Length: 404
Image 1 (tube, rainbow, N blue to C red):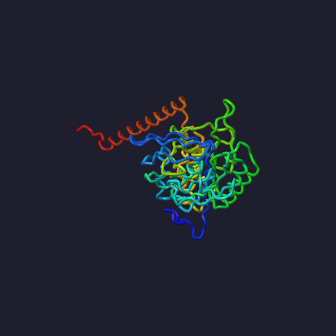
Image 2 (tube, helix red, strand yellow; image 1 turned 45 degrees about the horizontal axis):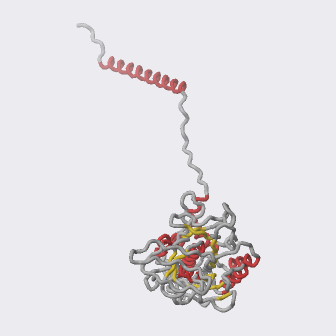
């Protein structure tokens, strides 16, 4: 693969392992795009196909810029890093090799459910997330992706009934690691812990692979309660990502435990369809995870010396933290370009001891009066002495004369 754009820092002979496993969430919900020009119709929502496959969108990409891309501004990072030599694995429904904006970017991949390859996508979710992570310029000139020179490794983990199991997720993570993954981002999760899934995450971490997963964005089954915790996002080694809306607030409630470590735009993403040159819109925490995975790919391409844990720390340390918001929003430029990413975090995390300036005690009234009296006596004594000296001098200069 070509060297990382702008970095020139990739060590010769060192094989970069960057897989962003972007698994499209089964609960991925489409949402209308931000306002477009008057002559451009809004893209339709990505259909939730239950029978057959998703077809092409009738709306071309045009020159629209989606709100998430305007918010994250990855183009500011591209002079430094475009994700070159980073492999991004997408765990979901597969990724179409014919998807607009991903031509030449998709590896054969693997189907861990039915066997074979995964470079086809009937549901469109995997292709949508791959476009968010690594989309190139489409026919209309719109760049969909955060890291437009990253390579996509598709891994299908959804069966014929649109179901995902802990075993499929575990097998998918293992397949991504075997296929050369550096970053693994999943688009869905399961509500129960699984020894197999936990072990797969541990193996990925030991193999220097960053695992990114969305938090649960499905409605709670109990009124007034947060949604169930999802796995693998609840594991401490995993970078758990939640979505924000246009107002900067979380787009879905978070569980008390297993909540997000990082936030990213989770609404209004404009993505390529699995076939044709048209575009759809999607939202959900899987979308947010894909944006975070794209940022991770940019970091790994520019900082090949950083292991997965330090990449994770860098993303967290450079995240934007509005006042009163405990979880930060991913900042791609700062994550790549910051010289000392921990500096801001240290200022926030560590209490600063205030500088105490000594203040003189209020003067004692009696002591002040005594000082004034003493000063007055001294001044009077000096004045009398001075007058006495002057008079003696005059007598010497003008002695008394006798009468003639």
